[in-house]
Length: 234
Image 1 (cartoon, helix red, strand yellow):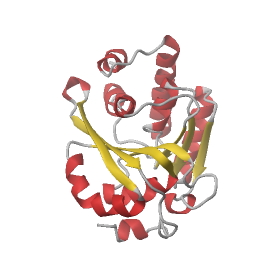
Image 2 (tube, rainbow, N blue to C red):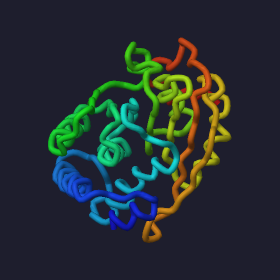
Image 3 (spheres, rainbow, N blue to C red):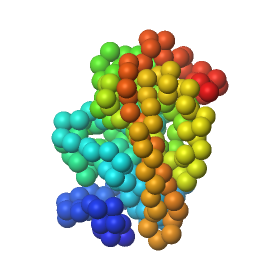
Image 4 (cartoon, one colour):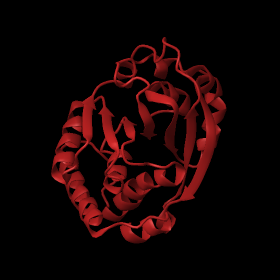
């Protein structure tokens, strides 16, 4: 499922990469017994709905060696860790606000032997104002975290001008754009492309909203923790 699904995305996995994904699967299932990481427990569904869905980012934007990439609200590591397995040369930051998830991510990266990965337990609203993280990344990623008009306030402050934010959404992703136009305009982004695709084995349609950072984010953003979710810019 993993090999043929990757080929459908135009990707070829090496034997070493396949082995890492298998280890990832085992660690995820093991930790999921005690830590709520995913509601999906069937191995085939994990491969399709987590691993392959994450790798679909490569269809939406290039990932090259040396790029700084931040995965906001990483949870169990999606989409950041699968992308790191496929393109080990990226410099990856995995950001999550919960200690148990951050612990899993640190353990996972150690077990997979991944270098060039930083795991941070913090709120995006706070880290987005910290020097060394604010306007410092080439790519920002978010999957199943929040509505788009909230996500752009979490993610756009991390990007350099010219950087790209990939928001992984379901089939209704285009509809969220209608409510996020003001937020994108205020925060320095604009929609570049919507990439639609279908998961293997009829597991559903997905979309990736490709948002380009065209100007610096104003200094007042992101707002205080909790404010973007309570009062989205829309």
